[in-house]
Image: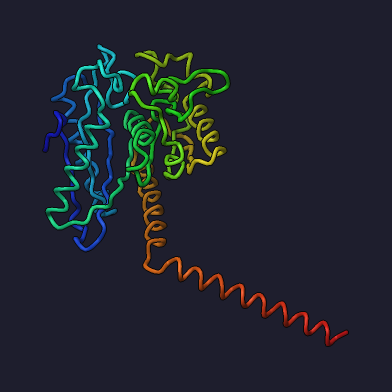
Length: 315
C-alpha cells in the first residue's frame, strides 16, 4: 500500500507484462461503501485483489485508490459531487480527482524507475459508484484518458451541458455552475468527444439510483427518463447524436451486478481501442496508407480506361 495526499492506493503489475512493451495503466475504482476510512481502505484492497487475474490476462497494470465518502456531511468524493469541487470543503474531501492525478503521476514515475514504459494516458473503469467516478473523472480530465468504461454510474451520467430541454444542469448533472465551483470555465468538450467511452447498465438495474443525498434530487434527473436504464440509454443517445465517441450496452436480465462477463466486455473494449491506437502509430503508417490509396486509385483508373477502350472498339 502507498499513500499520496492522504489517499491510500495499490497497484499491481502483471507478471505477464514485458518491460519492452508499452505499459497501460487501468484505474479501476469499484469498491464498497463506508464512512470509516480504514474499512474503505480494506474494500479498495479487496478490489485490486479481485482484479489480479484480469491483470494477468490483459497485461494491464491495475491501480485503485481508497477515495473517501462522508455522506453524513454531504461529501461524496468517490462520486465527485458538488462539494468535491467547492474550495470550502475540508481538504480530505476536496478535489479527489487532483489527488488521484498525483497518485497516477507517482505510479508512472515508479514504473519508469523500474524499467517499464508507461503510456501517457490511462484507462478508467468502474461500476456503480465506480461508474460515477469514471464518468466524472473522464469529463474533468479527458486529456489524460485513453478510454473509459462506466457501468450504472448511479443511474444517470454527468453531462458536458449547461442545460437540457430548458433545465439548468449544475454539477454533477452538468457544467452550468462549473466556473462558480472551480474558478474556470469548462473548455474540454472537443477533447472529451475524442475519448472512447463504453456505457452500460443491467436491464433490471432500477433500484440503485443516487439522488437526494444532496443535489441533484430525484426529481431533477427525470429529465433524462424514469428509470436508471432509460436515463443512461437516453443520455448515450444524446452523446452519440452529438459526435461523442460512445458505445452502449444494455445487459438483458441483469440487475446491479459487475460479473466476469461484464468485466470481460470492458477489457475487450479497451483491447480494441489499444489495437486501433497501436495500428495508427506504426512508423510510416500515414505513408503506407498514402501508397495503398494511391495504388487503389491507379488501378481503378487503369480499369476505367480499359473499359472505355473496349467500348470504343465495340462501337
